[in-house]
Length: 260
Ligand code: NAP
Image (cartoon, rainbow, N blue to C red; front, side, top):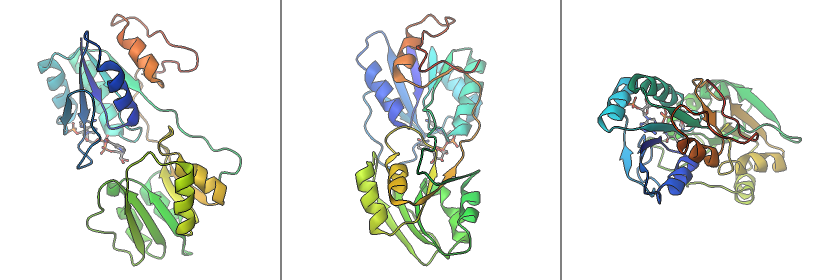
């Protein structure tokens, strides 16, 4: 059986690791190509876009892909939409592997906003010391709020740098633990973290660190995603592959398949 995993997440890589040794499966993983030096994967990797839903559907047919797994980042809404349309066009089953969102717990000081532009606005007029934990392509709106100090962490360099007078850039790749993020936030006297609600453990360090230090979090809400069958756990995605195409996935109560 030929499987295409749409990747770019830890879960996609872990799923590929689970499937790579299986001789009954031929697995390819697709990456958008957002980082110049992606983490190695244990299956063949295809880098770059497909040319929208139609391009992806053509690829699925040409490569005779039997099943599609959308394990993209929860904010990669365009790709998830393309996956839903392409699977329908190509007539193959699709499963989304989606991390549950984080929810605030006691001690968290979250403000939820729609997007990066709204986050920049929500910082307000009074200068703050802000940790911008966003993708490097999402930073532009903060140029409109140059009164703040920004600490920016990204995998690849931010080129050109933001047109603000006070910013520090750090290059690093997760996972990031609470202890190191607490030290980072304290060293830069950060009072506000701007973050996506990525879910999972690898990026949670800064959220726990903000709570421990009493810092505010401006959280970008997740975009709406297409209503397709979805699971939260890698085990459930593997179980889905082991079912006949039209069989409802056998999943535990902790991680139901949602959608239609
Ligand atoms: P997007 O807006 O959903 O996708 C834009 C286009 O990128 C897609 O239409 C597709 O191009 C291509 N693409 C996306 N994922 C792909 C994949 N796995 N394989 C091949 N092509 C892919 O997603 P985005 O621009 O990458 O990012 C949107 C948000 O997700 C940002 O907030 C970003 O920080 C976050 N994010 C993304 C990734 C990632 O690996 N993509 C990882 C971490 C976080 P075609 O239409 O040409 O096929």
